[in-house]
Length: 91
Image (cartoon, rainbow, N blue to C red; front, side, top):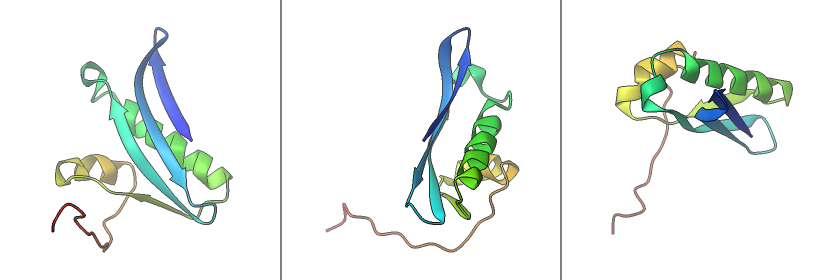
């Protein structure tokens, strides 16, 4: 699903949620236009995405993020967990 934010009819932010059809969903591509950041738009997008996922029966909402975004995602209610990663470009 996509959750979008508009200002004066113009797209200013969105978040994509991918779902495995079971109890796990994944937040992808949270984005807010640079001149609209720090106004709570991103957090509201993630809040609405979480509410929609919950209504669909999702139990676990996952997100991967760069370390610079940790504060943002903590404010959205996420907590760090252990995870694995493979760099598929390494030979």
